[in-house]
Image (cartoon, rainbow, N blue to C red; front, side, top):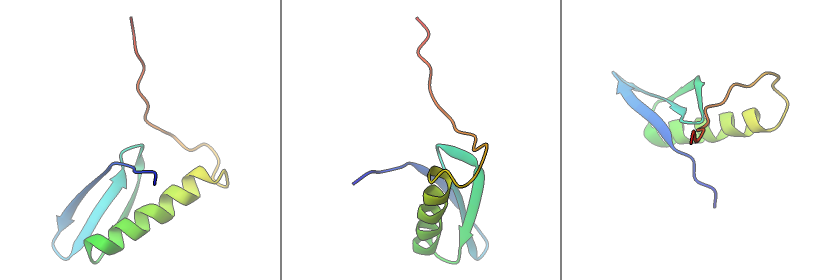
Length: 63
């Protein structure tokens, strides 16, 4: 199983969050479980190749 880190917070009644790898693409849910399902959907869409010019976060080792 592939795991992805995500950032989330609760704002009043809603849970908001984004995938660590794709911080520009936020989603929300009425529960933490719904937010997780929405994040899975976003990940699928962003990695499917159907959305052009997807921005990502990566690390670079500078020696």
